[in-house]
Image 1 (tube, rainbow, N blue to C red):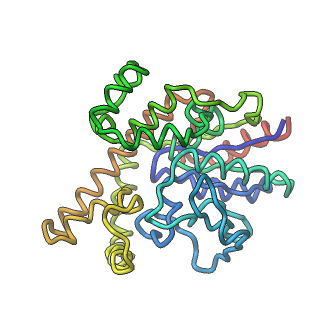
Image 2 (cartoon, rainbow, N blue to C red):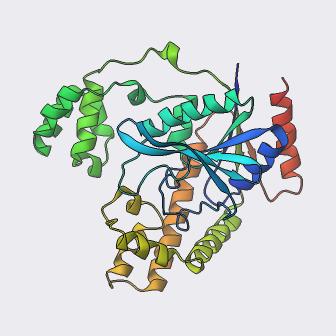
Length: 323
């Protein structure tokens, strides 16, 4: 069975550095599982931290993934390929289904290279889609049903979903209950579109390495990271995006580190308040990530601040990889 290494954890826990070291040690290639770093031109706010000297190898300039045009290739950081960064424009809507499709393709490519795929990121749903795919990924889109539903009002969609799957309706938050796209997708799933046989899902021998620093250190790491991104020019980056025609309604601009600046650019908030808001939202996000990952099974947790942390991680990976 093919090996798949996963390095997960909340923001500012040191995942990338650990993953790069493991990739060098075990002939690996990195696959980013970060829902923010897929957007082009959004480098500083998302913390891509790709060195300027890194070469981008373009494999396909125009590659469609579930209707979205993707720039498909990889960066070489040192000697390590890093995949699934800078895929789409900020105007594009990218979902776990898109990630799932492209990640599977990328993992297969890495196996062809006779290398170890190392999934790295903090987007829990992306990682789960590879190890324990959610039901909705298998539901084939029903174009005819969607067209019919798109002509209905939100109120009628709500009624239809309640009839189709009352349990799903009860699980939706207030925002999703008034989101036509979410309602239509929920109805589509409830109607039981054709599902891909579970036997077609790839099976991997998975090792999950989790990184978690003490809360005080995590808070400081996040605050330092936000401060660094402000100094590195995140405001100028946002201004460049706006000047190029990217709107505040674009999916990319709704990501953490960008939407917090909207009131600042509208002259309705100070820079100090904006930075405080950003830090607060990052802390909340880290808490949500930890809540998610603590529910994950079979995670080997490590504290990066421990003296022999990286050596212990390497030994854990070596034992698994050589079995």
